[in-house]
Structures are given as structure tokens and as C-alpha cells.
Length: 639
Image (cartoon, rainbow, N blue to C red; front, side, top):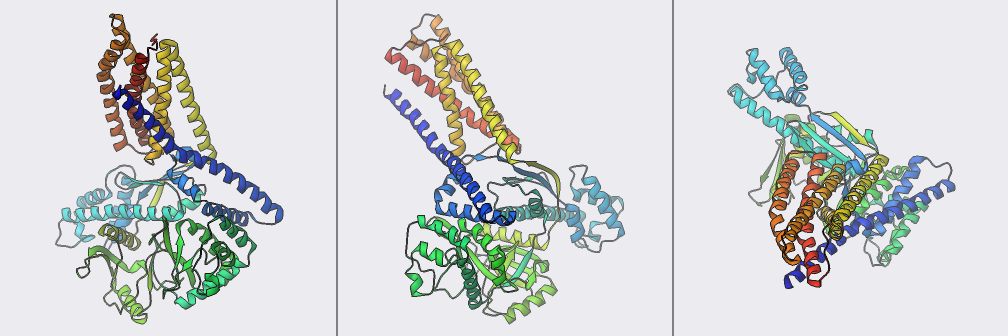
């Protein structure tokens, strides 16, 4: 009886945990419905109030209001981060397959390319587009047929062809890795939630962007050339004066006041966001009304810099405010605001980014960088990234650093600041370094990003697929109906054929689906359309386990055994067959997940989770119910 009690507690605990893990999904659905309704009503109100308003201006207002509502209710972001994530085929978006042009990379790094080399590259690129063979191998083979050594175009004369081929392949490998990092960085900055970026084969990259509707903009984002820039930070006095002008513009705008008013729902607290005694006495809500900019971009009054600190969930809102035409008018020429590439820390559980005021015109670009390496500083024993420049860049860098000692220079890649160190002295020789990384892995990543800016390889879109939001919703509805229909048909068959035992099996199917969805939510897995197919297959496999058990019990009852002995013997004899068949299927799922991509992985994931859930339901839950019925003397009918 103690063992039975323990199993009952285990089952109830699993059910409770599944509901707990699925609750954020329910919350997010309800939040989304309410917010969509509110925004739709506000859109109508704005349109009635100003019939001449443009669609872009209206979209900006709605976006600001949406950001304000989300900021006022942190539960929205929390629920969304913990809900079941939907794949591209269920929520809409775009999927592209990119190919890094290794041929163009080789043309760029080749020395003294002549007409013969150009003809070889033209033939090699055409041949590579029709096969999976390495471009490097094709080029090497064609040059060998012409009795031309690779050292004529690559490496040095003392290297053998095999050594040069090895280096060329490493360059090609690094180019794809750098392209992946650039794309990942851009996608993160673009604000796509749950993107999928993975390598396929030697030179291809699969990118899935759920929820993206502006296809052309996304394509430009993926294919654009990485831009590395060295920009000087504005003086603290200048930066703060510009920020005050922006704050004044926003404070006098009715839209800013209305959106800032949402902060009234937040807990009032004292603030030190300004450098005046009067403002220090304002509550957070009052301060947000009076200083819309400084309530988002917080300046440390004790700091000598003008760096502003912004919460992660306020970044997009601040970008929208800074992009407004009236705000742009008060920002002086050759001045722009850029965010840090990553958060500098957390405050009250929220990530904090830095907002820098910099020159719009760069002092130097990434075209002068010839190499970047991650290493450990022997003096401080901390990770650093060293950079090397060509002769032109070295001369210019020495001039820039010599003329700006004591000032700060921002290292900017794709519009975000990776580092903003103080220039300690003139730096000759074209060498520089970046410090402040948390570990060597982070330094290596930054080195890859820097090299990517110096040696970009063209990226081409060779395959593109777009799923609209309405089609995604249709897929969700169709998938739900498929699961429901499958469950009803299987459940009716089990009840018709096995009577009361069939009802137990039908209930176990519901719990199996509950467990699957709970695990998906708990581990942050993504549910896809093939994943729904895996759930439907799981329903059939779960019933198969029940059928084996019930038939075994029937056989034992036919020999004249008691119901208790028949149940124990039936489960015992069916266990091996059930476990063996499910283990082989689980191994197949592992193989599919390991070597498959996209839809195949989605199917394999839910299949494996479903197998584990169905085994638990059949071998634990159903057995507990049968044992309980035997103890209580409840009649068990199996057909």
C-alpha cells in the first residue's frame, strides 16, 4: 500500500508540475488577446483624432503604446519567456538558406590574380554550384591540371600545395563561422525572438526568423556587409546638453506624456536620475512625466562620463523616440546615439545596456584590420583581443590616438558598441587591443567578429520560404483538430473494445499529451507542425502499450487466475515488449534529431518526449489505477 501511495503522489506531482509549466502559456495567450484588443481600439482613436496621420506615424504611436504597456506589466515578458515556443510554420515568418561565397573569398585573398586565375575561379564557382565539393579542392585540381602551383596565388613559395590547401580550407571555414556570428548579431539587434541559425554542410547557413513580416528588410539585414568603425565619443558636457534638448522635446509632446503616464501603475519610489535637488524629490511617475528621456536613459550623477543606462525592455522604445523627426532636429550634425552590444549587468533582475553619444563620422573603418586574435594579457592575466592594421591604417591610428589622449574611442560593429576604452597614449605600429571581456571564449568571439568586419565573404540567398501569420494560425488550428480527432477516434475504439479498461486508457492518453506539452514548456523547446505529427504518432504508440498490457491480462484471466494475479502478471509480461519497442523507436528519434534539420528535428523531439510520457502513463499510471481498483474491489472489465 505504501508503494501504491508513493506512485499516486508521483502521478499527481507530475500532473501538477505540467499544469504549472503550462500556466505561462495560458497567461501569454490571455495577455496577447487583451493587448491586441487595446491596441486596436487605440488605433481607431488615434485615427479619429487625426484623420491625416500617416500609417508610419500611426504604427510608431501604436508601437510606443505597446512598449509602454509591456513595461508597465513585467508579467507579460515573463510569461512570454516561459511559454511554449512556436516554430516558424506555426507563427509565421521566413526561412532562408544562405551560401557563403568561398570563391569570392579566395579571389579577395589571392595575390597577383591574373587572367588565368580569374578563368579558373569562374569555372570553379560554376562547378561548385552544381555539387557539394569544396571550392578549394576544385580550384586546386584545376590549377594542378594547368601545372600551376598554388603558391603562385596563395601562401608563400616555400609552402607545398598540401600546406596551402590546408590554410585555404581554414580560411573558408573561418569565413563561414564569421558569417554565422555576424548574422546572429544582426538578428539579435533586429529583435527577432527565438531565431534559429545553424550551419548546413560546408558553406551553407540556415536562418529561421519567426514572426518576421518585412521580408525585404530581413533579406537586406542578412546579406548586408558587416561594418566595423572606430568612432570618438562626444565630450560628457556636449552629450548631456544634447540629451537635455531631447528630454525637453519629449516632455512637451502629448504622446510622450500619455505613454509615460502608464508608469503610474508602478510602485512609487525615490529617484536620483537628475543632478538637481528638486528632481531628486520627485516620485518615479512624476519624474517620467517631467523627464521622459531621462526616465529611460539614466545618467549616473557621480560619473565623469555621460554614459546612459537603459533597461533591456526599454531599448526598443528609446530607439523609436530617438528616430522621431522632432527629436532628430535637435540632435546636432555628426552626432548619434548607439547602444552597447551586450548588457553590462543586471538591476533588479533586468539587463542593463549602455547608451553612448558618439561622432556619426568614423575616424577609421574595419577595412584596415588585417588580423585579430584573442589571448591572455600576461600582466593582468585577463583576456584581451589584439588587432593588427595595414600600413595605411597604422599611420592613421597613430595620428588619431596621439591627438585624442584621455578621450574615449568606441569600437562599433553593425551599429552597436563593443568597447569604448580611454585612449592612454599614442599607439604606433597599427596594433591595438580591447579588454574587459569576461572570459577567453568571449574574447575569441569578439576576435571573430572583428575579423569578419575586415574580411567579409559575400553571402547569397539560394533558398527562401515565407509563412504568413494567417497561414501559421491555420496550421495551429489544423494541428489542434488533428490531435483532437486522433484522440477521439482512438479513445472511442479503446472504450468500445475494452470497456472500463478502455476508459482508463483514454484518460492516460490525455495525461500523456499533458506531460508532452509540459515538458516542451519546461525545457523551452519549440513546437512545430511536424512536432504535432509526432504527438499524433505518440497517441497511437501509447495505445499500443495499453493494448499489449490488456491482452496479457486477458490471457492470464483465461487461465483461471484471480484478477489481482492477472493484473500483476499481465503488466510484468508486457513490460519487456513495451520497453524494447519504445527504446528502439527512441534511438531512432535520437538519430533523427542529431542528423536532421528543421522539421525533422521538430518531429524527432516530440516523438522522444512522447515516448517517455507514454511509458510513464502506461507502466505507472495505468498500473496504479488497476491496483487501486483491485484493492477497493472495483470490477475491472477488459472487453
